[in-house]
Image (tube, rainbow, N blue to C red):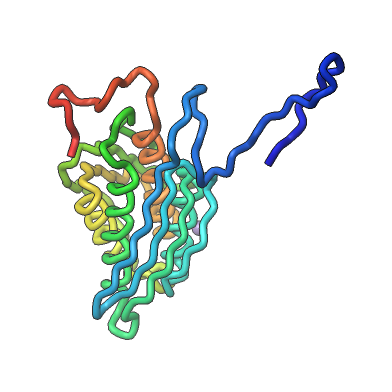
Length: 229
Ligand SMILES: [Mn+2]
């Protein structure tokens, strides 16, 4: 897309800002980076998942997992993290939502890991405290290569819509494990289960957006070891 910025009368030519398609590459701080994305297809006897994730996105998403509230959460994750996410999960919902939610977490974690590659230049750490009415959620994460989940959240109901509330922890355990991410999620306050879970997904998105962002001052990988697997 070319947008005329100004017309140079002397040379009788237009000066353009060239907006490159976000799926090709991106400009950050005057330095051009290849867009970081991953496509994963994973099929088992329990789920069939196709996921495309772009870390340097706009927040555009198309999500269909068969569980409406889970779709609502993943759309919020994309929107608030400025990730582009296309996801289709066909799971064995006649059993329950467990495999659908857990396997989607596994694939999302793999996509984050694959899209990051060798992690050169990324901030690596991210954190956010996100309020949503009564709910206040802290999320802190480290893309260290070492999976570890600390989940300190109290949900009072069994379900929100068609999502079993106990699956929220299973989802983030799967994400942290397959992405190689140290992930802390702590509820500081909250009473409404919809608000609490939505605040978790938004806080995670904001923290992850921060952690995957490029810091121009980082030469190579941000680690005294010289590598973060
Ligand atoms: Mn909502």
